[in-house]
Image 1 (tube, rainbow, N blue to C red):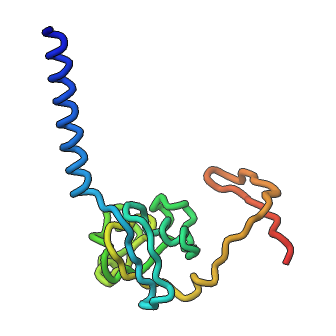
Image 2: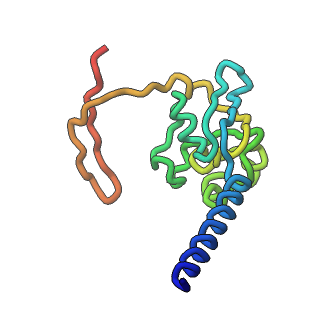
Image 3: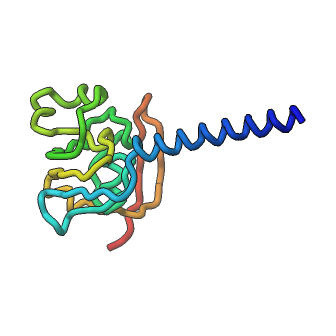
Amino acid sequence: MDIIIGVVMFTLIILALVLVILFAKSKLVPSGDITISVNGDPEKAIKTAAGGKLLGALAANGIFVSSACGGGGSCGQCRVKVKAGGGDILPTELDHITKGEAREGERLACQVNVKSDMDIELPEEIFGVKKWECTVISNDNQATFIKELKLQIPDG
């Protein structure tokens, strides 16, 4: 009988802890769809799920921002201007963005968490970037951290 009472008490404690965690998650972790306004143009606005990075949200919606490091925050190429909703600048961004640029809203798209509706500005030339399916011809190491990647682009 003592074993059954112990198992029941243990199970009730675990269930109570799970409920506390689920309640905290519902209050602390953003969820639902987020609208990202791009250049103030309603036709360019995108909807995405909360919780990811801005770079990934843009790419998933066909807007390809240059990012040589693949979103690691080390190259500084994925600069965007966040006018609203981006939160505070992260220490990882300060190597690439000055305090003056940060005051103007410059951010690295790979470091911005999508938590709430946002208003961003992108250079117009970004909208001309397209995704290509290519064949890798070679991928040779030239030096430490330097590779020569040769691609065969499709005809047309």
